[in-house]
Amino acid sequence: MRITLLLLALLAACALSLVTSQHQARKLFAGIEREHARAKALDVEWGQLQLEARTWALPSRIEKLAQERLGMRAPDAGRMRLLRPDRGAGAKAGE
Image 1 (cartoon, rainbow, N blue to C red):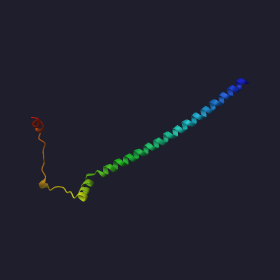
Image 2 (image 1 turned 180 degrees about the horizontal axis):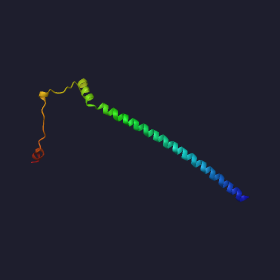
Image 3 (image 1 turned 135 degrees about the horizontal axis):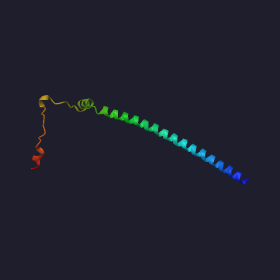
Image 4 (image 1 turned 60 degrees about the vertical axis):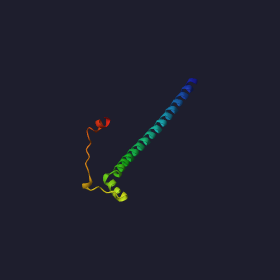
């Protein structure tokens, strides 16, 4: 009789342990799913921010702002000079 009660108590303890571990596993799985959803949302936001940064840096937008806000304009073609790098400039500077 004693051994039966001992085995019954042991069985109850094992059953409670199993229920507790399953509950903990479900909570952890739910947490993982939440974090996956959060990571996906952050990836979407990152993509939107990259697109916005590219939009803000468009050369046409920068040129328009330079003209409107700073009063800048492109120089006349006659005032432009094309400079070519002197290939020997580095060697001559050290002499």
